Length: 276
Image (cartoon, rainbow, N blue to C red; front, top):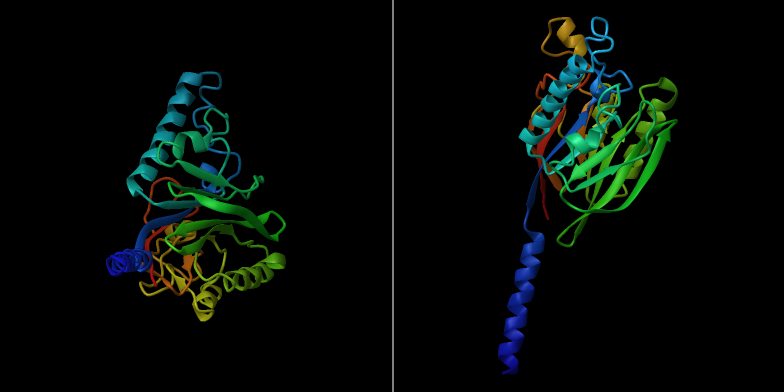
């Protein structure tokens, strides 16, 4: 009887261990939404006010149409984790709709935001639970929002960040985030790096995987200047990225045009596979 019980416990233990070591695939994305206004602060600029300054029915229809476009796009992506930068509390400059309530809550049970600044506002939306939420500031208002995701016996750091473009703070912030990421065994870091191609290659040089500039090549995400110049690509236009620890693989990368914020940023979408 003791032998049988020992054998059963051994099998159950082996099964649990096997489940903990199986690879896990997540569909993820990062999007600098540009305050829903092509990078200009304050939310969607309401059209039609010049002709209809007091007609809320006309301007309200425009807001609702734009809101539905954003909401539909987010739902169509079916992402397990969506990280955002340059979010805006209100979707529109008239403060008609609270953006998270309208765009994220229909799809996600757990929505996490960092400190709200005029230009910088990072968030993470997911149906997974994140714990140990905290922030790490890089320079002035620029920071990373960091949480712990538990999958089996692994703790994955999930990060939404924004690196400053200003010369005074940029290099130091880049040095800092690389140093911080080196401390984590498992991580998925999403964000706007505001970096040149050469600077982005510092991440794989540090032993990390990258979606943009990785095995599938470069994906334009700062598309405005490229489109104006009628080019498909250009140097240093690949500033948005998904960066992972070496034990998290990246596949199926894209940076699609959305017809939402294309003159400012494009999203980066990818499958990440948590191994080991």
